[in-house]
Image (tube, rainbow, N blue to C red; front, side, top):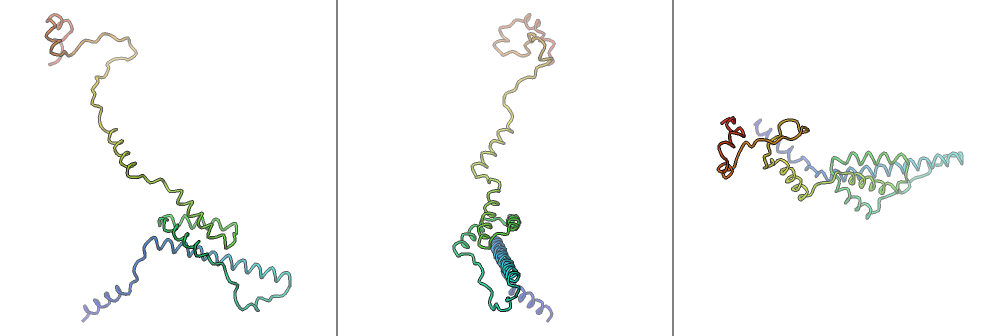
Length: 199
């Protein structure tokens, strides 16, 4: 009976688990929630400041008479769609940098209606800072260039012995081609020191 209970529990726990969201969707949701939060927060601070100013000028607090909160700023639908489309271009690892840049720009205390444009400019700035990605042709050309550098030089040149600044002396020929060998005499060969060469 116990194995059936454990099997049933594992089946039920798997069936109630929500499906995982795509990383792009998580990034878009995070950016937009951050934007909406700061819009509401700036509106709240502006409303409190307005009430404090009224209280100072009139000396009386009428805030308890206000039954409904003033209607806040909402991002226009077209601007929101453009922002969502731009957010889909963001890589998950860039999300933190965008939020940090956006929060830094809030120190100037902008109007709530300016926040969507500020967020948009922060996203564009981070996207433009990306290192340029190589196209397939760039990648192939880089790899072939590196392969040509590895290939050894087919020409073989003997290294010069002695001091290169010393006056050049006529070097003795150490090898002969077959026609040149046939035309030379034994005396010429012994004169050049060919007998002393190691065999």
